[in-house]
Amino acid sequence: LSLHCYFYAAIKTMTTERCMELSDSHGSLLYNDLNNDNPLASDRSRSRSSWSSSWKRYLTCIAITSLCLIQFGISTKYLTTTTADTLYSQIMDLPSVQSEVQQTTDGNANNDLSSIDYFINITTPQPLPTLVHFDPRFIGGYRNQHMRFVAFVNFAVENSIPQLLLPSLRWGVGQGEHKGRDVPFEYLFDVAHWNERAERAGLPRLVRYDASVLERRRRRRRSGTTDMMDNNNTSTTIACFNTSSNLYSGLDEGLLRNPNTNIRRVNIWDEIGRLDGYAHCRRLPPSSVGQQEQEDVGDEFTYLLAHGGSKGVGRLWADYNAMQRRRGKAKKNAIIDNRTITIHPEHLPVERAINTILRPSEAIRNAIQSAIVSSTTAQKDQQQQLRSPSKVLALHPRIEHDMLHHRCARFMEQNLTKIFDHLRGECSHNVDLMFLAVNIELVMAEPGSSLGSDLRELALENAIVLNRTRMTGMFGNESSVGIPMFESGWRTAENILFPEEQSTDYSTAGTTPRLVSSKSLGITDLVSSIVNFFTIIEADRFVGVKGSSFSTDLFSVRYYMGKRGNYILGPEGVEELVGPPPSHSCN
Image (cartoon, rainbow, N blue to C red):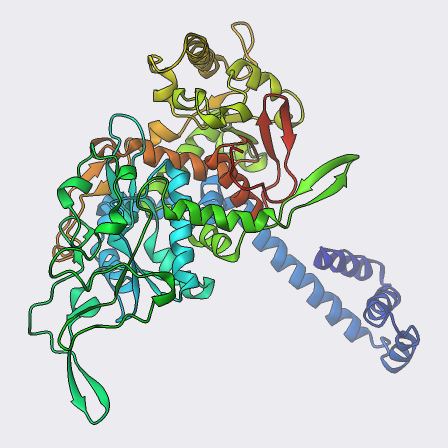
């Protein structure tokens, strides 16, 4: 803006031959601003610096004009050539449309051997303490698993453990016909992006398993009063990580990898280190982390340290809730717009850092981009979208059948008709599109016998309203079209392709893996939640519900990204959130 002001002044002075007068007065104003604590400084400066020579005036005006013309040219080129696709790609750090076409021509980008080599290199472990998640997978829905992951990472940070064993971090499907399936961390999230930023963010690196680095037979030999380490790996080492099952060694693989096993009822913690030969693969209390002592000369040694959730909701869930209780103690009330509002403190640095560097994998990011671009350009052509981007309202109503009788349901409005009525007004004003984050399959399914008669009627009514809204839009009917609705999660997720899972030691990394869809892997429900989550982050406004970990985490991430327009929905209506959200709780 300052350059354009100079541009105007320069043109004005050149065309009216008053360059000396205007430049002198304009320059003194600027100088006075820089020296506002000494108003006499400008007078002394003017007396010392005369603008009497015409060639100085001329060159000054020409220089200013040239700079402005260059800036104007660059800005015009950027605004006229940068499309909505490119702008969104820059936000999500995605490849441009042209590079994406090139990748399609050359083959799937995720299978590029140089990318695999880079992944192997950036996940190379160091001979340092490494935390292993001993549960076969994180449990719960997507964001409940995320909460447990946060607690797991926080344990590593608090105990100065610099590495997390990547193949032990598996995410699971928590509901539906494929309940119990799990998938590697790297299918869902960008490991390279994490590791490139982990040290700066104060977080541990994600490393692959390499027995030659992380495990060995340690033999001691005496040298005076000092124990000398002889790291001769020629003898057989009993590994503390099973690469075929991706489980901590010594555990019942058949039981824990059985999809019909309810791992909430298995006390895995007590089984660690019990079997003969696995005594060194033992659990460690927090006080002894990093101080592992070997009992006998010549025994096995491992850098792997076991930690996890175990029976019931598990230790990780309790640890995460403890992290949130620290926030709850510091909350305070404030009066804003004649309303008393509770202001909640910010999250702990570990959780804020995780939300900053954890992003979807490339395959999922590309799918999100395509879905958003196709949905917005369906309403406007590309030039219209560039001039006036579509305003998107995202809604997470949590009306799936499993939530209708959940203990958190009392905080939620569960009737979809009433939900849409609550959205009339400020939060939907001037909105062009509504994005609905809901599991369509679970909403449209026939209500089960576990629901009472009243809830079955509600489930059927919600399915009818949802189906009508898909056709006529929100607030629409047979005679008038409302705000168009689009979905992304399930439809987008089921066609995302992932490379077939390779061995944990990456011995086959030189071969191109076969591609498989999330649908064939049985992980569509999990992937669709991730698609919905990161699509909502980009929305202009978001309406979520209290009692939902998914909504609560969205409020948090959007807040730290500077995204305002966050509303919490309950039976009484919609209320805008101010500051970070309260911690997730159904109490």
